[in-house]
Image 1 (tube, rainbow, N blue to C red):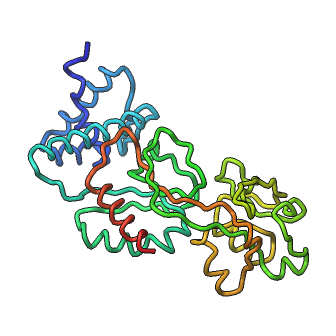
Image 2 (image 1 turned 120 degrees about the vertical axis):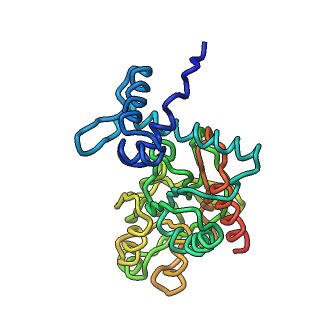
Image 3 (image 1 turned 180 degrees about the horizontal axis):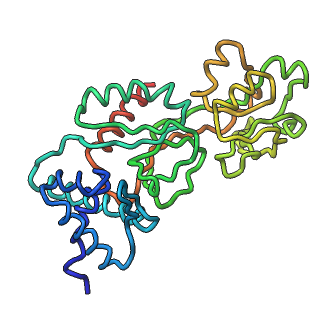
Length: 300
C-alpha cells in the first residue's frame, strides 16, 4: 500500500539543496529554521537513510541523498508541469537549463543558438558544460546533452537527431611527406592513427566502398584521447592520421592545414543527437531549446 506521506518533505528537502542551507530555505519558504530542520529529519527517518551530512557551517548530500534529490527534482518538475497544463499558467520557459555539448560543435554551431535562446527566454539561466567527455545525463542532472556518434546505445534516454555531419579522414602534408600517403583505408594499419576514446571501438573505422557497401578497418592506434580539438591539433602538427566530423575539420581543410584522404571511399557520417532523460516530461525550457536548435540546423 502506498503511504499517504509519500511526498511529505520533498519540496522542503529540494529547497534546502537549492538554497544551500536550512536558514536560507526557511526564508525562501516562509518557515522557521527549526521547522525546516525537523521536516528533513522526519523525511530521513521515514526513508531510513541519511540524506544530508551536516556541519555547523555547511551541508552536503550523501550518495543516497544525491540519488534521491535527482528523483525529487523530476517529481517536482512533473507536478509543476501538470498543474501548469491544467491552469494554463507559467508555460513560458523558465528556470535553469543544464546542457552538455562537445566543444567543437558548440563553437561552430551552438553559439548563435544560445544567444538567440537567451534573448527569446530571459527567465532561463544556462549551465553549460562544453566538454568532449561522455557526461552521465541522469546522475549529473543535465536537462539534455548533445552527442555526436555513429550510433547511440543508451536505451534509457530519449534521443532526437538534429544534424548529420560528414566525417573526413585527414592528415597534414608534413605527415604524408614523412610517412607516405595511403591510397586505401586498409593501409591505415601501417600508419600512426589518432583515435577517439569516447567511441565503443576507437580503433575500428568505418567506410563505404564504391558499390555502397560498408566495411570496417582496424587501424594502428598511435594516440587515444577523448578530445576532438586535441586530435585536430595533433593532426595539424603532423603526428598522425585521424578521422574527424566536419565541424572540427572543415576550417583546417579549407585553409590547407589538413588534406582529405580516400575521397572516393567516404567515412560513415556522424549523426548529432540531443538526448534527455526518458523518465522526465519534456519541460517548456527543454522543448524550446530543441525546437530552436532544429530550426537553426535544418537551414545549414
